[in-house]
Length: 503
Image (cartoon, rainbow, N blue to C red; front, side, top):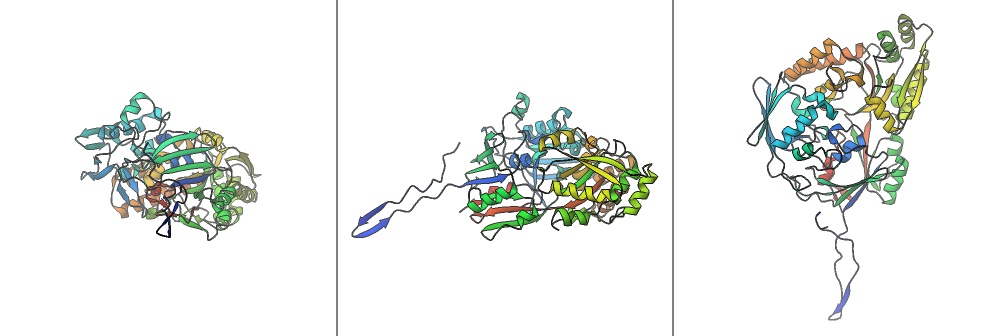
């Protein structure tokens, strides 16, 4: 641990010299950033992280081979450069030299190979495993790592971004300490975790991207966003991510507010492997009974963008490309009758009010709308931990979820909607047509061709009402005026705090 370079003001020293009062300059205040969060982290394994709180905190501790920048561009991370062969079946990554882990050991190509192999190991239960399934072999050649692929896979480069693709120590992997101890290459080092209370990080003096200006970052668990705003106003915390638009509207001029369109999306997941949702007409009836604009209006105070499946800006789905672009209760009732439910039906949904600020309001809006079509929606209100465990086990008929988006549709949905996807059990739907379309999307780097392919994927998902995509919310980062140099990212990552300062 480095010695702190900044200290609290220790007082004022005065002296009289030649009849003139001199005051010694005070030393700079410590630069300890406190971030308010409503949910605690739930684990220390970055490759298996699914909670937003965990992803954001561990994203400051672990590094990935590439990074997504503020303009959604792919930038060097732990790989300084890369190249595909002409067929798109081999990716060569040149690994950054001089990088060290928190424990002082050196990072290198062998760690990359071990990290990728760990993600591919089903026992890891890695959140993004499906994005690497086309890797046939991983070879170390000097300071390069070569990925030979079973098929052309252009989007695999974008898949290498993020905390779920964290590069770990091969030594730690062999020792089985991942998830028990924390040893990353990121801008901040892990200090401590007091469950239910706080997570503390400290500036990493050996970070390859230059030592951060902040001394420490503490994530402090605060029960509600209204309490978080009070703490921001009082100055006891200096940063938070706000998801409730009503709270965001209360942010005064004494604070800095960043409103960032999000790649994440709110969705009503339909488990097509559970009756009666295995009936296409029932799923379509649910879709036709929901007005997404009404959900945004009633649950989000109008703050959000109506969406289809794909939120990646270059491939954004046309939200009107679905059987019922707007609520049509008469058609919903017809579809229910065609599906064998002329008198309506009852279904359930799991919802965690703590998952995002407006989760309960979204649930109530959906319940009220579905009732107009004769569909009773029973709300199973659970805590965040229960939600995640039931979600991962696909133990639900429907689920109101806040899912992370990606800059490429392949990395966004291969894990969900292909038959071999590691989250296909959660998605509850796949088809041979989708498998074929995703394979085509991987195989070409031609943007026009990829747009056509992902348009077809979007339509296939909507026409089969795999899920009911609702809206993309805004994410509000709220900070003290004393915090400078921070740049918000649409991915939800807080990585740019590595460049921030407290003045």
